[in-house]
Image (tube, rainbow, N blue to C red; front, side, top):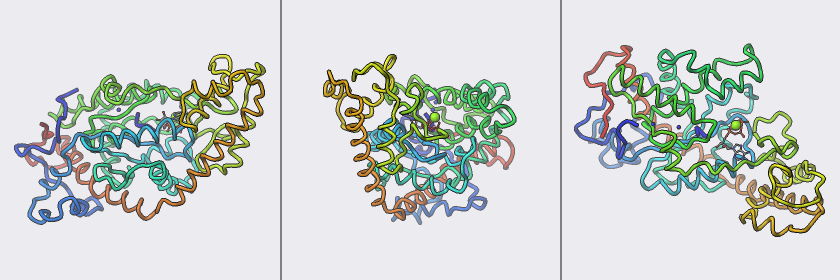
Length: 412
Ligand code: ATP
Ligand code: MG
């Protein structure tokens, strides 16, 4: 999911960064990570001199941008051009002034049925795909972690569940759409509950910015609602992420790029498509992917023209070609102006797809898996104490833990 997601006081700096604010003690014994360990590389010399809370303050010195893509299947060229590349550009552009939290929402992966034998490998592969696509994982402001490796995500979700209305979740458009298509008995509670998990994903790290597409806007609004609800009931527990409008202002409105299914070009290409015949997966054999292009649905107009309404198949192939060649849509359309032979046109697109996948897969093979796993584990160690600090505030507020005094979120 592009956890495509807060307007209390703007976080112009870390909610942990002010010396006059109290950080609640953590509960390190119940979490598997040596929470301070991961911070040592950031604070090599002063680590032993600092109390744990001060260590936490030092990591959260920048406002947080948070984003993730669901690892429910292999990713497609739609995900590549519509999400992976824009996320990498965003991370590179903002990593100086912001902390970038890129996470793999593995717990979100099976809200709808998946092949569980492939899930773990897929989460690692997703992380590798980002690296192959150019994500600089040596950047210390970019964190890359797996949701389920930081148990606070699940624990906060269970707590927030009890402050969330059944009706409120039932009105979520994504839930209605997906549950209507399979029926109530085949709809999991995980799918119903997924906006609450998404709210936890965001609130644990005090994220300010979460790039959201249209399908996730409602979930971001819910995140703001639950945060404000908890804040008014229990004092200021959470940082409320910016509004959808502010998100769009900050990231630029989703440009609406949609690569369509090759067989049914009025439907978006999706990684969870059952047949995969109209879908180009990043791990497709390049020759087979080229064949998928050759078999793409077109029309009988014998005109290579960009017209989504009347020539959706041809328009989609023109769009794919422009992305692969890195040139404007106008320029590819001009290349084929006056040509009438769809076969020749498809061969050009198929050739570019084959070349792109061959190059990309070569880069993917070159990504060192150990380096990626080390990055994931390091980020998980670094961020666990941040997430635990939020969870601990909430646990105290709702009475699960003794109140150690000030359970108010520290906020600049
Ligand atoms: P699913 O079938 O599981 O919903 P999906 O391919 O639609 O998979 P999502 O996980 O819903 O992918 O979305 C991940 C990101 O990829 C989002 O930012 C979304 O906008 C982007 N994206 C998905 N499909 C396309 C597409 N066909 N063209 C461009 N961007 C896409
Ligand atoms: Mg989708």
